[in-house]
Image (cartoon, rainbow, N blue to C red):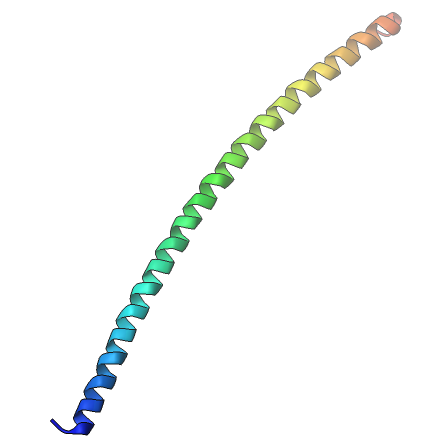
Length: 81
């Protein structure tokens, strides 16, 4: 085997192995990013559930406050009712 053919073979092997390794690393990176996306979505859904719970809590408290205000006003101004 001539020196030129050995060089060409070596270069082609290096390029092939580099390509395979690069594709493998990119797939691993893409898989990790997909997993991170799922984790972010789950966290976002958890925050949304918590926000909805807090919103409902605020609605209940607002309703109670409005009822108390109406009762107070009815006691202060009984002729208006």
